[in-house]
Every structure is written in structure tokens, then in C-alpha cells.
Image (cartoon, rainbow, N blue to C red):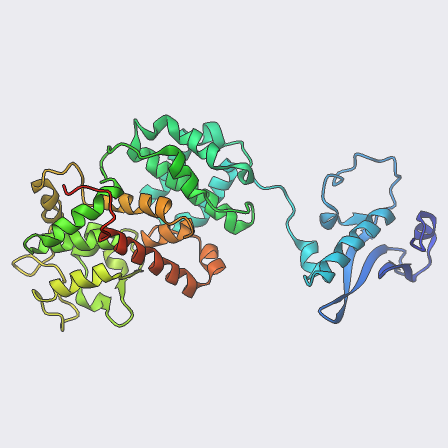
Length: 409
């Protein structure tokens, strides 16, 4: 039991007065009173200031600040100081810094809507104006009605599925974008410490099922992609077919493939270092190259000058970049109801369902979508790139897997 009493706290003379177990009352000559805790942290003695003495009458039960955790209060009664001292000593025994624990933000997690606004504010600098505007507009229309007021740490797979089901069949293109944006909010919230987990991608994909092809970017179901990839690989080589094969193997945008040069390829590290000038968001981005992508590049190498770093990998007869229509025509000639850009959605759906152990932000980064830097740091940059390599290597193996359920189209 402590040595101090409420009465002695009020009447103590200037100096340091021990309550026991490292808790002290400090009284200055001016009469100001405060609490101090002396603890051992990693073998070193530390003095932790705990705030001033609260000598208000015990009956004042509704004072401003009474709803704050003890760690956030600036004034403490004797009983509260003893309770906080126990907490901070336990923190020190666990090997953590009690001073940092004292400073920790203990406000409850925000609502989904507030988390979405915070996500938008943090990431919009790396987005185009159109993307930034669409992010909040789509969530406001399709997510806020059911998720807006829900605490971000309480949002689970069932909540997301309930939100998306209303548009999953009728508006598949919009639904996929909303799903990705909800995932961005959940992943950002995980990085901020508002949630203990990232977006439950696999569970959501399982409960939603496959969306119907629709919208401006109809995508081939991922189960059908391997059969098409193998069939396309066996057809007569043209720049358009080879470029489309690389689009599929790397889940890249058509424009990135059409405008890339041999100087962007690092054969030794098996990397495709894409400058901002060919990227949608004008931000440089690196893609790991799987075996299938390397094989496609080697086939393309026989048609252009690989020793010239400024030479386009895929060029038209005049040496300029292929048109977008050249790649799209390959699919149109095969009378397929899909577009090259849709393979990015095929890859994303496959990643969510077939690679559940790969964190959702890794798949987003593989598609050159914006990912909070704090998320990348959480995995360490080298590890983050290696997980992206694991993901794209898995995609490459899937493309040539004989166990594919798809049919030759």
C-alpha cells in the first residue's frame, strides 16, 4: 500500500515524496505539485513525468477530460497516478518505452468515412486529379450509405460484401473500382494502427463470386487466361501479339508496353525499370520480370536493336511506337469480348483468390497503384519488392499451368 494519502498530497512541503514502487510526488517551492515515476528501462533508470496533481473534489465526476485514458490526462489524482504507474511499470517490464506509451494516441479509431477522407488526403498527391476526385465520389455514392458511420476497425468482409452486392452484377466495372478503393482505405488504416488487419481480399472474393464482364474495360475471367496465353504464344509472331503477351505476363498497361525501350530492361536483376514518362501517374515504377516475360522479351529481341537503349522493344514499320489499336486488334480479330486492359483485372482477381498469403498492398503495387509509404516501410522495401516478385512469378507459372481449367478460346 502507498505511503501517501490524499491529505498528505495536499499538505506536503516542497521536495520529493515517495509513495512506493517508484512513484513520487514532486512539490516545487511555488507549491505546484506533479507526479513522477522512476523505472528501469533496458537496464537504465528513467524518470517519467506523469502530469500534475488533480486535487479537485472527488464529487466532481463530470469534469472535462474525465473520458480520456489515464495516459492522455495532464492531471491525475493519487489513485489515478498509482494506477497509471502500474501500467507504465508493466510496459517497462515488457521491454517497451513507457514514455512512448504515455504519448501514444489512444483516441478510438475513426469511422470508415473519416478514414476514407484521411486516406484521400494522404495519397492524393500521387494521383491524377481525375483519380483523386473519383476516389471520394465513388465511395460517397456506393460505400458511405452502409459503411460510412461504422468504425474502421469493425469493418469486416461481410460488411464489404454487403456494400458491393448492390452493384456487383449490374455495374461490375464500378464495383471493382469501389472494391479496390475500400481496400485502399482498409490498408491505409492498418498502416495507421486503426485496424489490426488489412483488407480481407480472399474472403471478399469468395463471397462475391465473379463479376459479369461489363463496363468500359471487360476482363477475361482469370481461369480462362492461361489457355488464351498458351494459344496466343503459339501463333505467328507479330509485334502486336508479342506486346499483348507482355501485357498479360506483367499485368502492365498497354501504353507502358508500347512505349518501353531496351534501356528500361535490367536483364541481370530481371527488372523492368519504367520511367515516369511512360506511366499513367508520371511516377517511375519497377516491375519484376517472371520467366514468361523474359521469354517474350527474348523473342522480341530478334526484331529490334537491343544494343540501343533508346530503341523501342515493340515498334511499327517506321520505327515508332505501336498504336493502342494494334494490340486491341489482336483480340478483336479473335472475336473476343475483352480488351487488353482487362488483363489487369484478371490478374488482380487471381491475386486475391489464389495468393491469399500475399498482402493486398503488394498486388496493388504490382499494378503500379499508389500504396502508402508507411505500408512499404512496414514490410521493408527489399522484402516488399521480393513479395511482388513472388506474386508475378506465381502469375507467370499460372499462365502456363497445364492444370488450368480454362478452355482454348
